[in-house]
Image 1 (cartoon, rainbow, N blue to C red):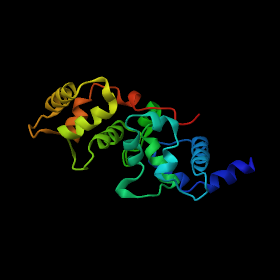
Image 2 (cartoon, rainbow, N blue to C red):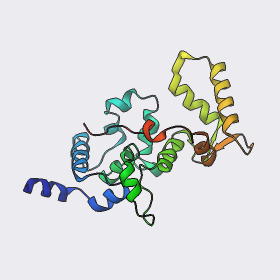
Image 3 (cartoon, rainbow, N blue to C red):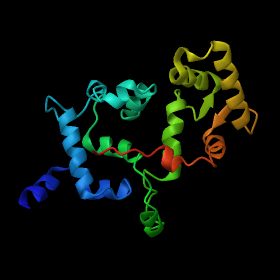
Image 4 (tube, helix red, strand yellow):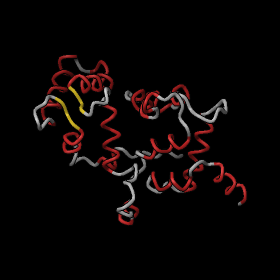
Length: 197
């Protein structure tokens, strides 16, 4: 039992991480910490882009580079453990019981529907201007479908997607328009993965 508590003591910011991430369990944090340390093969105490590129699921994901970018906001080159947990928390399934017991004065957990949508939005909004342009939509579509669809078809899909979501007619999709266009989608399920095996 002593090794478990000493292991937990090594995890930085345990209590604040649990609050911020939607109450990730202590056991899950320990497993994430072990995974973090395994990815940090040289023991430097942080992860780099190269460390994350070694994750098989990201290596084969067409949006893998964009997902990896999300771990390094503001151009940072180092990812500490709390940052690692914060990004992964977006993919944690929403626990209906926890959601109902949440103190409304506390910030929304990172795995909430709105925070999942914000995370997805930033994968498309490459220039971080708060809008998804036709060009950004087209870039994402190219990554996702590869050579299976002609350029003309991709342009048509991008045009139609932006046009359908763009309520204010500015030729781009704002976060609110993005969220509204996905209101019927079960984003909680679509953006939930088991990150701990």
